[in-house]
Amino acid sequence: MRLIPAGANPILTKLPGGVSSDIWHVQRPEGPICVKRALARLKVDAVWEVPTERNDFEWAWMKEVAQVEPLSIPPLIAQDSEAGCFAMGFLDSAVYPLWKEQLRRGSTSVTTAHAVGRQLVSIHTATADRDDLAKRFATDHIFHAIRIEPYLLATAERHPDVGTHLRAVANETSRTKRVLVHGDVSPKNILVGPNGPVFLDAECAWYGDPAFDLAFCLNHLLLKCLWTPSATRGFLDSFDALAQSYLNGVGWEPRRTIECRVARLLPGLFLARVDGKSPVEYLTRESERERVRRVAKALLKSPVDSPLRVRQAWTTELEVGSSSPNAKHP
Image (cartoon, rainbow, N blue to C red; front, top):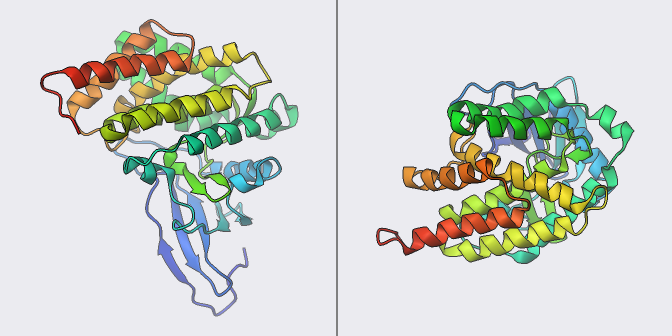
């Protein structure tokens, strides 16, 4: 990419985090940058192999979003498609803290959640029902390998009692083609910047179902209630703020239609994060995982029609658990 002059010896530091790419901090006289390279095999216990061409689509996603919400992505510097990597501006955590780290500490912000929902629906609105993007991001093979199979189908194999329901959700998600999807809208991929949220890691970029992006992020806010119980009220308020700010902006299809898809997908993702190929690392007790399974399976067998009702089912479970004589209160 000709970003380093001949004879220069920049300081390179491998950055932590993530399972799908190598990410390096490169210190140059002109200022620091990040270089990201996709891995063919992800760094998880299960065998999980995905095409490295997803690096091209991540770059393409950011280039497209730069025309819609330019402050919601890092500065773009250069790409080397043949080497499967690209360079972007380095955003210092002192100015751009990671949303996941804030949530881990119990620091919740309805303003942040609202902004995430607003920016996400803005991206979806600008890319809705566009044949050019549908052709450019026809990445069904990548999305299946990195999202549908390891989350929904692998979980269906592990839980045959809800396998039919999970496969139905997977099929519905796979065949819905409406907007440019990020595919990994998670607090670990969102920086809280001075001008609003910044989205990272669009390796799963795909022209498909907008319900996936919304459900994927809402799912994390529900799970965080078990990670940092003292902040449960804040997580649930953030859930409501994100869902409402997003849904209030939906115009490419009836709001009720996407709400129903989110409500069917959400419990599948909920269960997948304890029993799929990529379980969250912070649910370490079997009793916690059982609570997730109990609520997720009930909702898969008897679907509800809105994310709010999913949140209400989880709230009921949390209230029952907190009133148990054996419950551990924060």
